Each structure stands twice: as structure tokens, then as C-alpha cells.
Amino acid sequence: MTAGEQDGPPVAGQGAELVRGVSLWQDAWARLKRNRMAMIGAANTLLLVFLCFLGPIAVRAVWGYGYETQDLAYGARPPNAEHWFGTDFFGRDLLTRVLYGGQISLTVGLLAATVAATVGTLYGAVSGYLGGRVDNLMMRIVDVIYALPYMFLVIILIAIFQATNLVSLFVGLGMVGWLMTARIVRGQILSLKEREFVQAARSMGVSGPTTIVRHLIPNTLGPIIVYFTLTVPSMILQEAFLSFLGLGVQAPRPSLGALINDGAQHMTVFWWELVFPATAMAVLLFSLNFVGDGVRDALDPQMRGRG
Image (cartoon, rainbow, N blue to C red):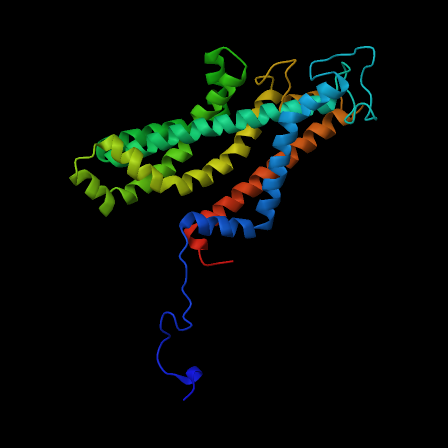
């Protein structure tokens, strides 16, 4: 009998293949890399971040003007060799204003989503861990706030702060956008708090806050990251809507929403004032949503083993 005809399972060291295990994060990263639209979205997002944060500096260094530089005598002109996106009614370079507006929108969206994720995670974790009447009371508070109009609450918070700057925007948006995160985290904590590792921590005398921060929240990072990536484009869209209403960043500092509002007023005459900011906003939102969808699919336990 030849070696290839031997009976029985292969023995280690005699041609057996060892299967190397992978963690959840390694498996998710491998699946994310196979998602073409998510990777294209990530590449577009990184390119937009690079352009928005370094582009205005390069324009000022090469051409010598910034987003606030006016030339009333020059006025509004279509795209040309000197002004690639044209100029607005006040003679300001639209390319610089679109890039700086994207910088504002990205900053507000990222910070607002961070505030929402932090508040929602802590609130939901405490509610789920304590349970009982405390959990019931905390969730009823969430239900009451959730029943109120979202933008109405944001406008009230901005009015309370009595300021229309970046701080008031991301705090106002973040302090209202944490509700769904709190619900998601609470559900995860309820399913985790009776697990063996939590019981072991309690038996060793670990305090409740330490158990929440060191043991429970790290085990809910998957859903938190997924919802965070989906919240960023939502916050950018909400900031654009507020700026469109005149409640966002005030002139001369632009945001994409404010630029779209200005372009909508002159769209029949100066078409470029609307087309370029709206295109930048659309590309940014599509890219971020593709990334968010890819992260959700990569971290979804039901997707393991597929693709």
C-alpha cells in the first residue's frame, strides 16, 4: 500500500494543514477589503479629507487668497484657469470656499457623531447594567425625547447656547443624536451582563462603573462602530440643513449647506455657485454611506462565513 492509500486521518507533520484562527476584527477587515464599494467610498473620503484640509492652504500659498478674500470689481465669473470653480457674487474664489466648507462639514459631522456615540454609549450602558426601575425610567426619558421633532430640539439647543459656531453645532447635534446609540448599547448590555466574565468580575469585587467601562462596553464596540459610521453622514446632512436655514456657521466662514443656500438664490444666473457645492456634498455623503454600509456588513455576525 502506497503512502497516498493509507487509511485514517492525517497526522500532524505528515501533510496535515493547520488552520490558523482569526479574530472578529481580522475577519471583519478581510471582508471589508472585499467590499469594492466600501473601499471606493473610503478612498474618496480620504481624498476629500486631504483636499478639504490641505487644499485651502495650497490655494493661499499659490494664488494668495483665502475663502474670505473678496474682489467686488471682479464679481461672479464662471470657471476659468485662475478660478477653477469660478467666483461668487462677491468675487470670492468658489474652489477655496467649497474646500473650506467641506472642512467645516467634516469637522462638525465627526465631532457631533463622537458626542452622540459617547453620550449614548454611557447612557445605554448604565441603563442596561442597572436594570429594573432605573432602566425603565431612563428608557422612558429616551422615549419622550425621541417623540419630539429632532430638528426642533437642535434649534432649541442652539438658541440656548446663543451662538452659531462650531461648538454649538456639534454639541447641539450630538446631544440629540445619541438616542438610538443608547438603545442599541442597552440591548447589548442586557444580553452581556449575565455572562460568565461579568459574574467573575463581580465575584472578585470589581465595582459597577469599572465593570461597565472595562468589560461590558469593549464587548459592544462592534455595533457602536457600525452606528457611528452611519451617524457621521447623517450629522453632516443635518449641519447642512441648519446652515441652509441660516442657523449654522455664519459668514464669512462657509459650510457646504450655506454655499448651497447661496447658490440656490443665484442658480438661474450663476449656475456654478450651486453645482460645485452640491456635487461636493453628494460625493461626500455617498462615500461616507458606502463606508458605513461596508462596516455594517463586515461586523454583522450573520455575514460571517459569507462572501
